[in-house]
Length: 295
Image 1 (tube, rainbow, N blue to C red):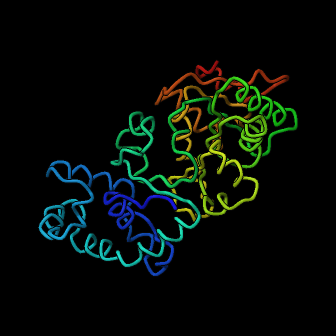
Image 2: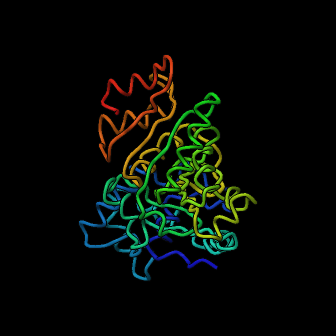
């Protein structure tokens, strides 16, 4: 069974996570990433951390944070502690762990590169050590052509042969083909999912490599979360943060998650070099990324 969450993680779950068994908790009652970031800043100013909000003498601290998040809202969310046990037990039964960005187990590459913009929580299954291996982020369109799909699989296989971890998003198309190519060649794979972590970890094709220690699946979103376009785009920065370099195999021009994630790296983050496939024929999306500085 996986190790239970830290006190910091428990507090963060209560404040930001839906805790699926508590379906009467409306999403708008939870702290948004921005609200939680401001709360953490306030706690830091007071020489405290999230765990202190669930200590036996937290009442005064909750009041001191009232200028950032109302005391009533904090008390309401922190009062959901009775939901934590069953939810955490259901995750542990599936070997799902969860960590908070204040924890030592949180991937260093994500916390150091994204700082307070790193996801407050990361859920995962598999060997966390793979999150510290760097590697190559491979991304691309869901509906790529057969040639691009074959190229992605070949890249995954060659990376495995060179001892390079493949980091991707687990989505249908390029992501899955790159991950499959690496896995079939005995390589290490990290999948950063935007949805459906709980289903992915019980998938028969994933279980063997998860147990072998060559696959780690993570997500910034609740293990039962459904697909959301915004979530898919937001998790792109985590993919690039975990890797030493990125490779875009196919993308539309000016739209879609693959384009926005690569553009964000080229324009803002600069976590590492961004490469694009030297595709035959005309590829407006890849040409557009070259114009922005991709290699």
